[in-house]
Amino acid sequence: MSKQRSRRANAAAQRNASLSHRPAAIAPRRRRKLTFLLVAGTAGALALGLALRPLLRRNAVPTSGVVLVQGTMAGFLPDVIHAKAGQPITIRLESLDTSFHRDGGGHHQFAIDELGVNLIAPPLGTAETTFVPPKAGVYDFYCSICCGGKANPTMWGRLIVEA
Ligand SMILES: [Cu+2]
Image (cartoon, rainbow, N blue to C red; front, top):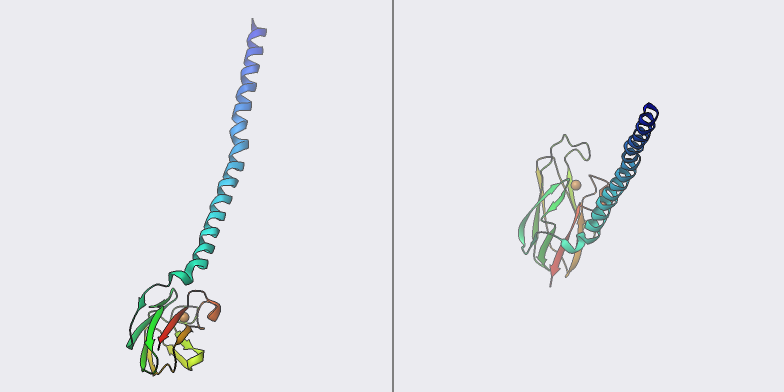
């Protein structure tokens, strides 16, 4: 009887041992898979967002005269500006960042190379310039001061000049 009991006990102990080992062996693999899916999914969503960004230009404000453009580390607001060829437009650039920003020290730029426009707003300050776009076209404006400069995907926008 004691022999039989010990055999049963051994079998039960073996079963328990294999049961207790199984989840421990599977869990890390499942966790790795979930982690991979999470990281891959996040990276994919970010890449898709960047790829679609030019199609999702926000805040298209049809305006001329004086245009207030706010600059932050997140980009320009608005980032689409409309103007008329041959009519003066004033850009008032305001930096909403403080001098405590390590990248650029709170300065932001508004530059359009083709039109010779180059504004730099100080931290929590403004700078403005008036110019006359000579002809219709789409001109990119950018800031090359903060966050990787001109290559920064967020610090640029479009001036759309109509005839
Ligand atoms: Cu900037």
